[in-house]
Image (cartoon, rainbow, N blue to C red):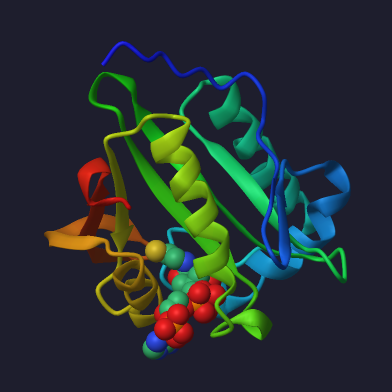
Length: 186
Ligand SMILES: CC(C)(COP(=O)(O)OP(=O)(O)OC[C@H]1O[C@@H](n2cnc3c(N)ncnc32)[C@H](O)[C@@H]1OP(=O)(O)O)[C@@H](O)C(=O)NCCC(=O)NCCS
């Protein structure tokens, strides 16, 4: 593939209900609220945030992956309320393989309303159509039914389970690998 994608301009998207944009410092409060909630961090490598400084570090990580050209992380702003209610994005970009990994987290008050389906449908299209990715993968703890349901709804295919793949919060966790290929994306 001769297309050479570079992470120069941070893309901004508008969906029916949300704005997906780059995080700015004033988002720290909403990011803190999101990631201080144990329901959100339960199936992630994160421990619940304890202070606004943890939120600042998270935003620094968003800047780092952009600078290193390995990913984008968008904040999901509810257009009506202007509140940041979640985040989604890509990480672990493998340029030589045209492959990238997706991640997402949402404030529990908004679960089950199709928010993340709407948000990540948009960035999946961007990955295939603009970034020209061949494969998007997702790593999910097998108990995380909501996340698995979301991926299945978006036609991700389960490849298998990496056993005790990571040591998170004092224990080894399995990670199920899901993916969608360019040829499966319509
Ligand atoms: C995973 C997560 C982002 C899902 O977000 P969401 O906005 O609630 O998901 P959606 O409402 O878009 O759901 C997509 C589909 O899955 C279904 N679904 C969502 N949660 C479900 C659940 N708990 N049980 C059954 N189905 C569920 C929805 O009904 C929807 O299907 P539909 O379009 O037919 O209605 C959210 O639960 C979350 O932030 N969890 C904590 C953080 C996390 O686990 N991140 C991912 C780590 S891998």
